[in-house]
Image (cartoon, rainbow, N blue to C red; front, side, top):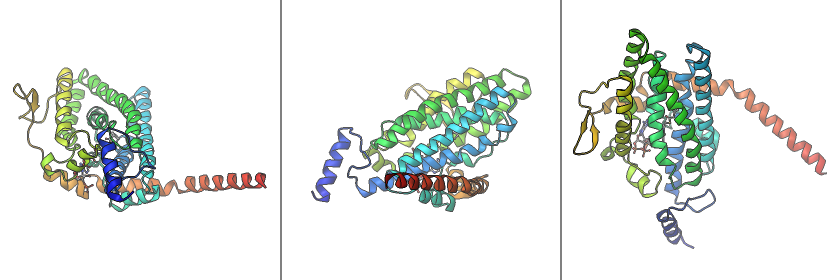
Length: 315
Ligand code: FAQ
């Protein structure tokens, strides 16, 4: 079968909502787009461990420490599923890690902002995981089987993360005036960066059109951003938090909340490596990778020993 016929069959499978599996024929651009998005997603999970990991030793109680520790470990696990899923497209883990360390691959802009107070653990869980869930629930319907299946488990775990974050903020909002102030300050710093996690507006998003056709993206950046705003406003109001956006209000005609313009210059600066913490995040990842070399070497030596033992027994 020639390339054109293969592509026609492939498009028909996508139209029928069939999952595409690793050994199936795929257009080269489909492969490259998936490697780009899935690896960016994996990198975001493991870089995303850093702002919260920094607070594990400073959690205010044992219960909070246990929950935060579990959450950060979950994020590491998400990174691993996603790296494995990306490897099914013919790229190695080493290549992916090198792309992150060299700055060739992107990761989510949000993780380049600093976590300054305990309330930020609440805001990250509630807003950042909340935004991630809205995006990832849509990705459960993605056409590439390994990506779509990874999302199912990831979404279950993210929903616990979101609740633990919301509960931290709810507790602070029921606390002293200083605690309420800390929670509001955190909301003021994280709200707009969380909205920018969904990526540029649809008219400035070069990848959306093709990714929607391939059913990699089931919703556009603006659709997901709007869903997140609509879901989050009542939750904030319930615990008494206000929004750093004077244009945020319910639009009866649209049946959605309107919100003010986002600072896209800041977004692109952060994406290009000039955010408040880009340098320290990448340095921390490189150091962790280098410090873990002995573990990888030991695992390889052990695997080699096992193979040699099996070979000896087979002879
Ligand atoms: N940050 O054409 P589009 C989490 C780039 S997981 C940095 O719209 P696309 C869990 C984009 O790559 C969070 N770069 O791109 C957690 C593209 O550049 P390229 C991560 C961004 O791919 C919680 C260019 O801009 N989630 O939070 C961003 O169609 C707490 C043009 O943009 C995912 O990765 C950004 N925010 O749509 C962990 C979900 N936005 O590559 C720890 C999967 C855009 O052409 C603690 N990814 N860019 O040079 C997606 O759904 C999509 O990739 C989008 C972007 C929606 C992020």
